[in-house]
Length: 165
Image (tube, rainbow, N blue to C red; front, side):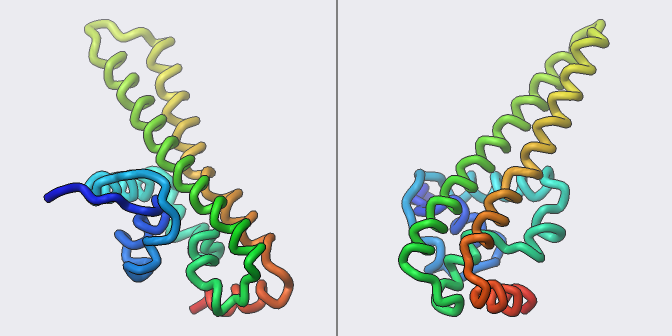
């Protein structure tokens, strides 16, 4: 199957986990990524982000969700223009953090595979993995909170009602 150009990291990621309809994945072009690669990235994030989807995102859906509900939230053109770069940056940063965590694990595996592993190297590797995983788990939080902060008080009430559903 020929890889196709996905137009939004976050839109496509949410599409793959069944969070949004297909048309919502076609907002802003950011990078080509095959569907298989994207699915792997989303899965990796889900496995290494301290249950972000079920814990934090459950209560604070974030910029992509806000854009998807722009009509119901009565977003202004200015708000939409502020939300779009948030969701694109969030996706790029998250996938970069996936890569950093993979790299940290790879280094750990390499250092652990020698006949006499260095205690100092192994400790440094484990610390690097912990920092990379914490960074990955943290990555989306500021974007989700910033996206919410761009709403006015009436929109925040609507947001909470819609998010509760």
